[in-house]
Image (cartoon, rainbow, N blue to C red; front, side, top):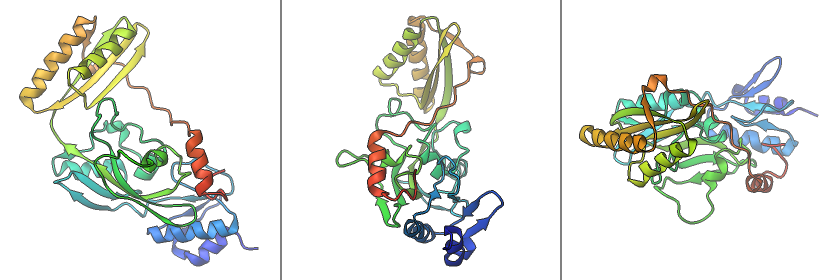
Length: 295
């Protein structure tokens, strides 16, 4: 009986790369992925999605040949990009148009497919940005080869949130092939940092700042040996930025915060990948009963 690698080598000869330790599937199109998943399901074999933990014997899917930035809509500020592109490449393209993803530079390294599978770490927080969202829509392939389309929309108030299920699922729900990301205008920016002896005071300060209608571009609460550090990144046009900085400093100092230079602030700890919830596991088993994309 032929192995999945042998079958794929015949069906998709330019997409298979045989190594000594592993076999890579390097698709160029969504159709390549769909055919590979169909053949894997028929064989009862495994394909390891981007961002998933390596599994012995599974063929690893690598999207490096799918890196095109398909379109940038400067009016709606939505960029349509293939899942093999890195966030850094998208950010470079957006900056030429005075737009940005609004993410920290250290969070821009991964390919988008892996970033979504890993829970979109480094993306904008819902607490800091309650209206906007990073992902407006996506294209994907289910484990049986069927196409999944979630059309771009500003907000989703009804129905099952498949975007939330796919995000952080480790690729168990579907293989993301392209995504619509929401950009924002590039504005003047300012980073502020404070040290608090009382951790609760730092948390309360951040809540008060949001309560006053100042939503940071990003924020971080970082435990220290002396208490808690609060780092805040503000974005706005010149005069508005200055007014927000004054408000933030006043609220922080009123609660015992001591301002420090951002360069002296403790680094933000690396985010851990979120645990896959029981609901997502159940959905994955329903959509992928033969376990092509999972254990």
